[in-house]
Length: 543
Image (tube, rainbow, N blue to C red):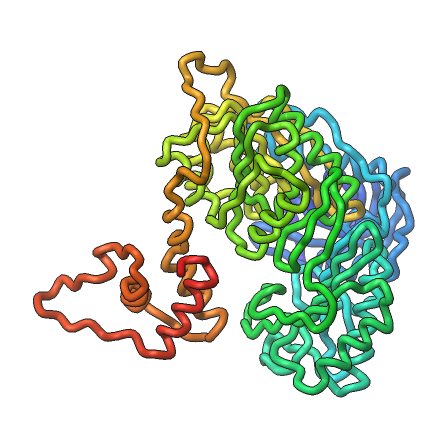
């Protein structure tokens, strides 16, 4: 058997595709992954990486192209880590994504279901209402996106998937940086200031620009807001996010409104929404309306009933459900998103929907222990999917149907497989192309328990009659520690947290208070750590 070696060149046919849209060639009994290659093509391939588990190649020369190949519109295609599908026709892209979801459900989940189709997007370019540009280059600032698999910023003059307003804001920020001698942030050293430019745009043309920094801007703050307003007349708000963490989280830390309104107002599914920078909101509104319409159709084939929605964000799906359900209760862990959701419900006159701030698993457990039994549960988790605890607690409430909205077919398949172990089988699956020209795809799946138990008792309830103290005190010790570390870089122990909780009159588990040694003296929480813990508890709505 031949052994592949780095820098050797082979001629091979591409006979497969990965879920990330990499072409697959089989050379010397090894699968070699080639970015930008399409099934049915013949390439001269240079081997660039060989390990025991994986081989990567680079296409040196295309000898025979596939009929679906197209010339990429973007000048940085192949260097930026974004548009994995720009080298193929849109019809081929849709088929690739449909098969991607199908393969995940069957191979990862071991589920006997086929995707009933994929809903394509009317626009393949300029469709995104959210841009997150990385800023790099040190004292010669540039904006762009990370090269695939790295944190190296690939400079761009503008992104074809983004709005004109988003591109204009990023140009304005880097121009202001050069004019004022403000360096870009460097992840490795922690030096520099500007980290990201985050822009949200509405369908009506308004936009909010959030500039993410590693520290304050001092007297230069007003000039930044002025530069952005001059470059983008449609701006409705300028926000500064001071993110001092050393990780790669974009929106973290403290937010300051420099001008206008921090929240963006937009319309979706006939409702008007106010969206905070931290709140989740779908990036492709026309496709989101099609996705939500399908989710509501699967969740509520008949009007009425009680629906729980977990990971509800700013309430976009919840308000769509509320038009058909008898009652909707949404849960979301981001406090700003929950406030958005409550305001959005008031703004749209939705009196049959309520929102709570809680982790998905904790919210589901609290409902179950309160004796609640929803007819339907709708979940729309982040890319990492649901926790095993959240799946377990949802299944324990025994709803008739569970509708799972997912942006990652692999985690969807994993969670659907776990739901099946609790008696919920997939009954329908529809893919929606929310992210044209990228390898990502959205999916909505109906999980059904089969025949409805005629002995099931329907429980009507009101949150006003429920004991919601579990939500008010729901932040875990690890969440409090994480918040304190993120905001102050202080490490606090569970013992210190329990001491402050007792001072605030909150319930504390015995394991955090009592030493196993007789007459043991416990260290007392220092004042600066007490202040930080109290601030974290305020953030989570505990005090």
